[in-house]
Image 1 (cartoon, one colour):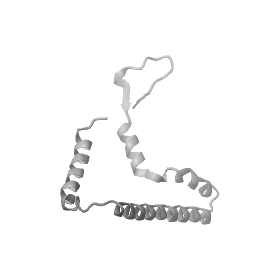
Image 2: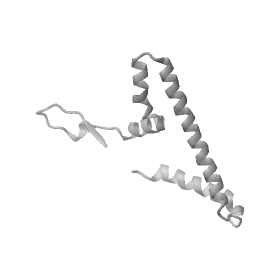
Image 3: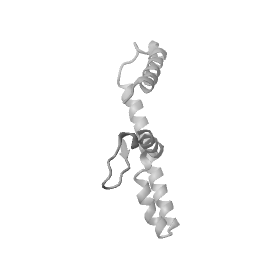
Length: 111
């Protein structure tokens, strides 16, 4: 994705473009699931209501942790339903293969 800076009536040259994809991806991964919190925090901040802001942060933190714990528990017990006895002796190799594929994908894939 490119951002073109221009003024009306002028022609945009291809050398005048700025690549923003790495920065956009950095901001998305930096903020993660907190993007919805940004506008929600503005309302109590504008009203100078520290109590409302603290309640909002506490509720968000509680439900984020609850969701993370629930997903780990469901994954743990869900994986226990599969029979993995034959794969267990290859777990180190499969873990290494997974890391290799992820690293190769990040290094050599130019999307």
